[in-house]
Image (tube, rainbow, N blue to C red):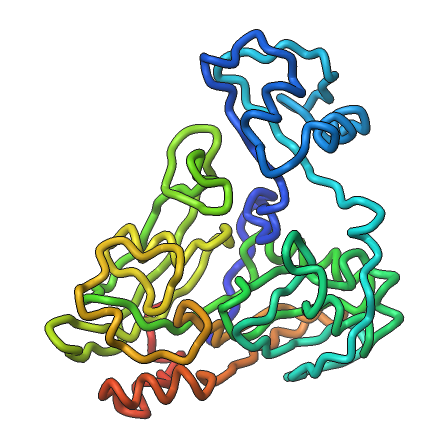
Length: 341
């Protein structure tokens, strides 16, 4: 396996873009004051918090900081960068075990279990990877976000890199931005999945701000997922496919949204589950969420420039599920060098 070449940098491909909230002003709110508009479009945050972010310069349109009394225009694209409160910033070190795959003076590569949140957020202020990092590596508190460079969804397992220095974090972020980072996933999906590349832009679902959706226009960003089937079995009257996916971009929930759009939602996904077969509920699956595993991670070392690639076999719950469904053990760990994905 070779790392991808470095194309022109596109900063919007940074995998942590989910923190930036983008909204488009609807016709019905045209002419209304900015804080009132945002309170309508971003109801998960209080009007007082939104006002504080506006006053602090974290609300912009076309690169310009907006004022609270700004009169919103229909079709105007507004970007909001949420800021944590003082309480939310008081992250506490917690003695949570970490599965360290690789470590040196510049970075860590961690095998994250399903069920672990990467970064504290509403509803998950403890028990996260960040809390664990602060305990095991107190010095990493000097690096923004305790060195976290990219994320995996709570219920996605697999490989994740953490920078131990600011210089390493800056370099790794640039590699993500320029699509030089190799990210390959294994997943179980409903139905017969065909080999294909999905080009479908993704944005925040305007009807449910906790979800992502296929979208067009300025509120969405391009997303590209390469999908390769590894095998298929019958379950009741339905089919289940084992697939490998390679990301070019790192949109929030990208693989889950793209596979659902194909009519092949991931097994166990609690959110993106349109067109599930009627027998889906009969499948016993101990994993807390979607059957998705980040199996391969490749980067250029931030200090030496050496190409480095790590692999992580399926966790036991996914392997047991695959064997119980009838997949062969060698199917559950493909020859990545031989795959065109």
